[in-house]
Each structure stands twice: as C-alpha cells, then as structure tokens.
Amino acid sequence: MTNEIKTRIESELEVRAYIQDLKYALNNGAKINFQAKRLIDEYRDEKYTNQYTVDTLFPDENPVDALKRELLTLSVEDYMRTVKDLRFPKRSEMREFGKVYNGKDDVYIKIRVELLGSYGHMTTFIMSFHFAEKSFSPEMFPYRKN
Image (cartoon, rainbow, N blue to C red):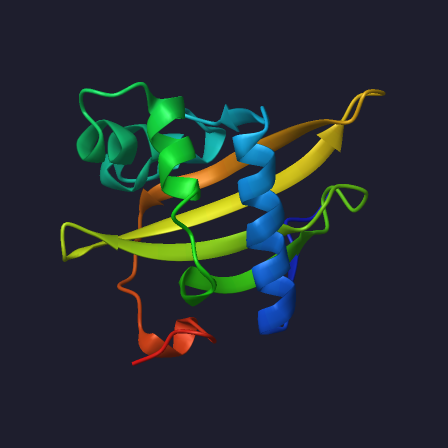
C-alpha cells in the first residue's frame, strides 16, 4: 500500500459543475461525514488538526452544521486541485479548496462526494478542514481573480 497521490487541475467548467452538484447534494439531505480526529493528527501540531480548527473558528456551533454552511460558500475561486487517491482507486476523486478566515487564517479543505448504498444517498466526506501548514500563494488557485 502506497501513499502516492495523483493530482490534476480540472477545467473551470468542471469545477463549477462540481460545486453546483455539491450544493445540490448538501441542500437535499446529503450526509456530512467529518473526520474530527484522524490518525495523521497524532503526528501533527494540534493547530493543524481538523478538530482544533473547527473548535477555533466555530466554537459555539455544531461542527456538522458549521461545515455544511461553509461548504455551501465554496466558489470556483477557492479551488486548488483535484486529487486521485491511489490507496483507494475505486473511490471518487477528492477536491482541494482553500479559504481565508478572519482576514488572515488560511484553511485547507479537502472533500469527497460519493453516492453510497443502493438508494444513492449522497455523502460528503470532509477529510480535511484545518489551518494550512504553509501559507497560501496566488499560484495555488488556478481560477482566483486578483
């Protein structure tokens, strides 16, 4: 088992369609699966963990409600890249986004949306929603306007 990843930049139209589908799913009962605690977090500075970031940004809110609201605000300008997880090649690709909170805090967001089960229930897996370990730079965002 390798931890390789394969990335690509989707066209602006593909990203817009993905975001439209994400918003449709979230507004029509998609389940949000948020990984508050991850194995990788055991070796990471706490500041860069999902749990710490959500607790810091949304201290008095239900994390799933806050994350749903935040995902609904994603735009094509927040898109960074698309990632194929080679560990799980049959799973759908993940999309990486970046947003700035409080005018200074870069937050890295990685999500995967999948149809699960025989009834086609949409589930949004939030793998990452944490403060970025490295500051964002303009070239990381292919569709961000100046």
